[in-house]
Figure 1 (cartoon, helix red, strand yellow):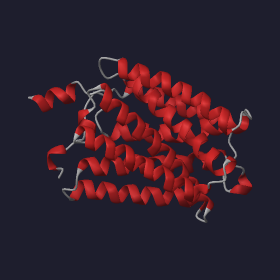
Figure 2 (figure 1 turned 60 degrees about the horizontal axis):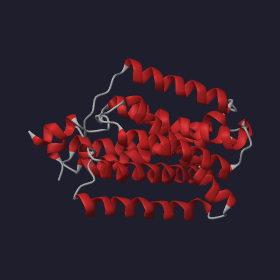
Figure 3 (figure 1 turned 30 degrees about the horizontal axis):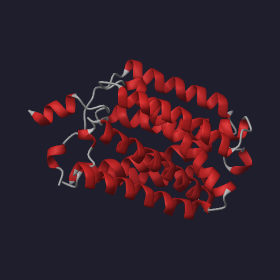
Length: 256
């Protein structure tokens, strides 16, 4: 009974196909939206990061204060982390000169640090148990750093040879492997969730770049602002017409 109560009072959506569709769209919006502010509007990476951090701080504060799961509020938090992740990763690579490899290693360490602290304090990093302000804070920090890590990974792979289409294909294959492990093995659902959560971000980053980068760079040269508006409208439509409920990992009983 306690487990069922925890799921009903969870502040995050049930992990279903709809969740992943919106998540990938949100990561793509993060790339196009982040670039629109920092490049198209020429605000720069640092200023854009501060703007997105303000949005993130307000959204997380509202999410933590909320008494129950609210899909629009949850996805605002996710989009804030993806847009901020884009400008943070670009700032580290292009302004600080850390590079995508160095940035990826730092961000991976931060993700592991937050997950380790979360595990030590709570005894679990499962999204089935997002029911208290402290756990929500750990969850939001994890998604922030994981989305920033995903941005750096996506940009690194795309710039290393495969290009945007090739990079997207690589991450699709990796996500297919995660799905196969979920479908055909008893591997921990928590581990597979975080693996998929991280991998959807570079997928979105490469798709976003494919849409908006110049043709000579391998992109389609679409407007960053128009692309962002269309993707945002798609996310809103999904939230309205594909209702989500609070929940956790499907098949959690098989996790180890």
